[in-house]
Length: 125
Image 1 (cartoon, rainbow, N blue to C red):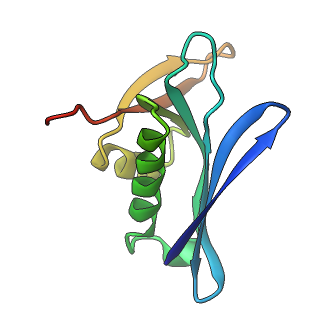
Image 2 (cartoon, rainbow, N blue to C red; image 1 turned 135 degrees about the horizontal axis):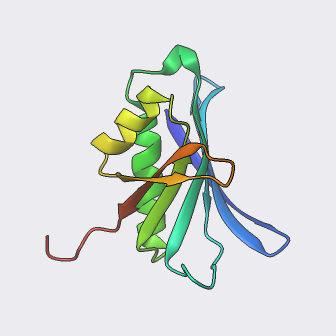
């Protein structure tokens, strides 16, 4: 799989988009939001992660997420955060295998949401 990235700027928001191609077919994509929020300036937000169903279970999602994390660290982000549906067991397992840590939150309408964060590697470790 070839991974391509492009920086985007829309209405002042900065993001990096990732697209995975295999045999001229898009098989994966993700978006890493880099916009600085006042209370979390060193945090990036991972969104829109997808691997085509026919290509799941082959390591493409892992490769995509490793590239996303590498890009976040290169952009001097200290944490990558994401939200995942509670019933997306496969994605949740992948995030945990890659070092993301789960924390739960209850939405205003009373639903339980799962959030994950991945801290940047500590130099010297």
